[in-house]
Amino acid sequence: MGLEINKKALFFNLTIILLFLINFNILLADQRPKLTNIWDIKLGMFYSDIPTQDFMFFACGTNGGPPSRILKNKFNDYNLCQPDENNLREVYFEYDDEAYYWALAFNDTFSSSFQGTRVFSHPSILSLLFDADGIVQGVRIVTDDRASHNERKSSAGFFFKLEKTFGDDPWDCVDFDPEEGETPIGASFLKRMCIKEKFDKTIILKGTYFRKKGQTTFNPVTNKPTTGYFESSVRLDVFSKDINVDYSKYGWNK
Image (cartoon, rainbow, N blue to C red; front, side, top):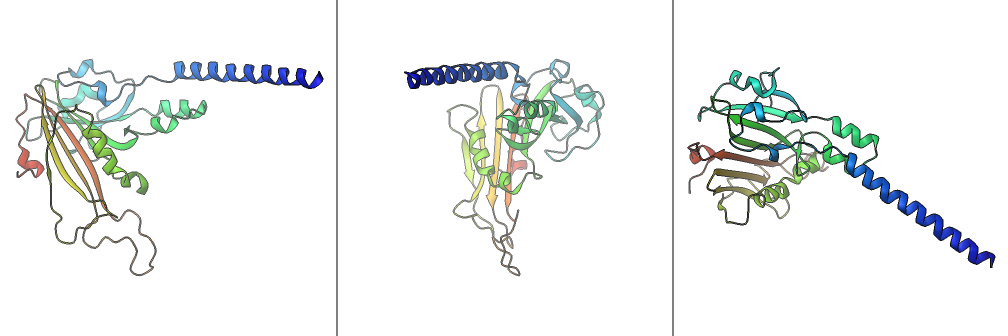
C-alpha cells in the first residue's frame, strides 16, 4: 500500500516538473528576441525605412571586406561612401550583440545563433548597396576570414545552403578547373560560380574550398597538422534588375 502511494506521489511530482519545464520553455520562446536580419531587408527599400534597432557599427564597405569610414548616422550616411563601378555605395553593418547576452543570461540553447554577425550560423560580413537616391539596389554577404578553423571548414555547406535559398529553379553554374598546385581538402574541391536571374533580381553566388599551392595538411618540418592552411570563401551578391551587372568582373567567362 505504501509503495503504491509513493509511486503515485512520484508520478505526480514528475508531472508537475514536466509541466513547469514546458511552460518555462514556452515563456522563454515568447521572450526570445525577434531580431531583424539581412533577409528582412528588401531590394527597393529606402534607407530611412530600414529598421536598425538590431544592427550596430555602421561603416563604408570595401567590396565585402573589412569596414572603412565609420558612419555615425547609420544608413543615413550612405552618401559618404565612395560609389563603385555600378555607382552604388556600400554600407557595412553588424548585428547587435545584445541578444547574445540575453541568451546567455537565460541559458538559451540557441545562444550561439545570436553570437556575432552570422548567416545560417556562419560568421559573415554584411553590406547593403545604395544608389544615389538612397534606395537599396544590392545586398552582399561574404564569409568572414576571421572565423575559426572549423567554421571556415564549413564554408562549402554554407554555399549549398545559400544555393537553396532562392527557389527551386535552376542556377547557371560553372565549376572552374584547379590551377597549378590547387588540391582538394580530403575529397572536397569547390571552385564554383553560379548565376540566377529572376524577374526582379540578379543573384551571383561564388564559393571556394581547396588548398592552394604550398598549403599542406601537415607541417613538413614538425609533421603536426596545420591550422587554416586552405582557401575557403563564399560570396553572395544580389542586385536589383535596375543594375546592369558585368559578370566578367566576377571571373565569369562561360
